[in-house]
Image 1 (cartoon, rainbow, N blue to C red):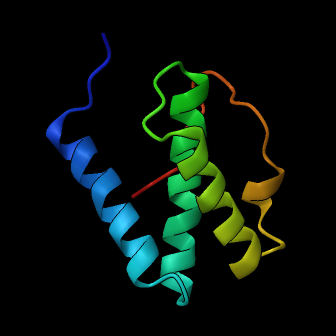
Image 2 (image 1 turned 60 degrees about the horizontal axis):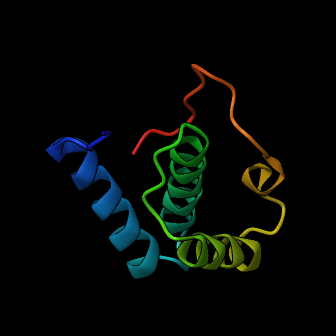
Image 3 (image 1 turned 90 degrees about the vertical axis):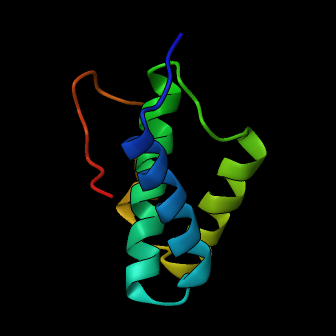
Length: 86
């Protein structure tokens, strides 16, 4: 069974907190994009860490804050690809 190590958990937790705390700042929106990329990567690798509802809420928030984000256009995941850096 897949488990996140403490460093990975901290990155995810910090990204979520940053997203909601600073969602109106560029840094917060950047973190939101990174969190969505991480969620997509983990989901397609078979290790989702967000519910579908939570993911949809994050994506909707990104649509409001940065509607032209390339992250919203990305579908699926290429094996070996990692675009997030939290």
